[in-house]
Length: 75
Image 1 (cartoon, rainbow, N blue to C red):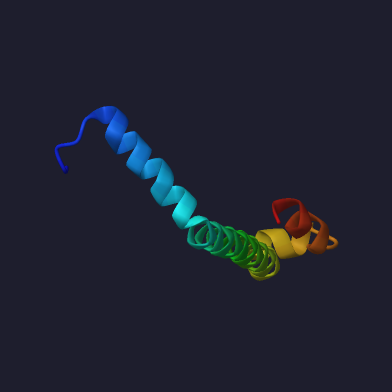
Image 2: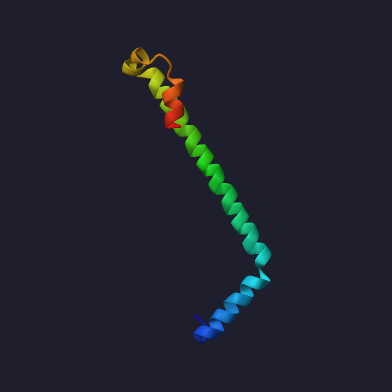
């Protein structure tokens, strides 16, 4: 984008990363936290929906003794 050769551009990118190592690290850490939070949220929502469906649908509510175990397997 600047018209530099490949080696010069690679050197500039390397030194840019070195100068901003704290920024890159903090963005990576925040990304990991948000990813983990999303995984937990999706898992909890799917577990709750599966439990609700197992207790509200008549076929499952009459044929299952305890809907917690199948909901935990789905969870």
